[in-house]
Length: 254
Figure 1: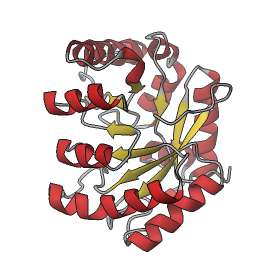
Figure 2 (figure 1 turned 90 degrees about the horizontal axis):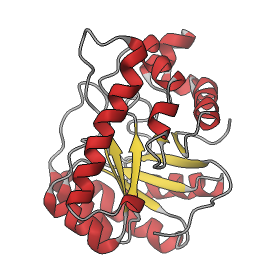
Figure 3 (figure 1 turned 180 degrees about the vertical axis):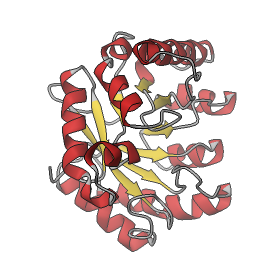
Figure 4 (figure 1 turned 90 degrees about the vertical axis):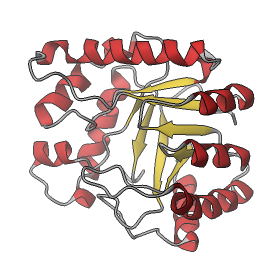
């Protein structure tokens, strides 16, 4: 893993190499456009560039591993050559894509499935790459809002234990509470933000991914995802104040 600054919060720049991502689908879906955007993210201060070849928006169309590899790998290889000191992450739920990315020099696997298989765990243990464990489960309908964060923390704790049992070092694991993944609406997601210290208390770096999501639009009344950046930045700053280590963002302009 390439070194990251230890004295300040971190920003992970989102690089969607997809035609159908909810906010910027199609804007960077050629290798040249994606590489240019990845370079721009790094130039504007992204500490990590997160490359994804499959949308995870609600109702997204699944992508075969071969197609995802064809989208992601040329971009990752070119950015690895041109940004030798910048940590690169691959945003994928597929072991085949994660393995190829690690072989090509990725430093991190950002897996929103929350369920890595034994093959991926072995590769993480071998390479020392970081792994983002995401809580993607929807809460029970009768769960009180004031119990949500602890319920998420308990689920993440079980995931961490499973990773460690399969050889992934605790120092390799980051936690993503899964804002917008199974957590619907502004009230639920903002309550999870308010109670973020319950997740920070697990003692591992917390990554917050809320940029431009629909619950930000609900809270602000802004229907256009591309116009939610200022509110997304406020969300990130609040998360940092509550102990988050990193925010995943579309832009660093705010």
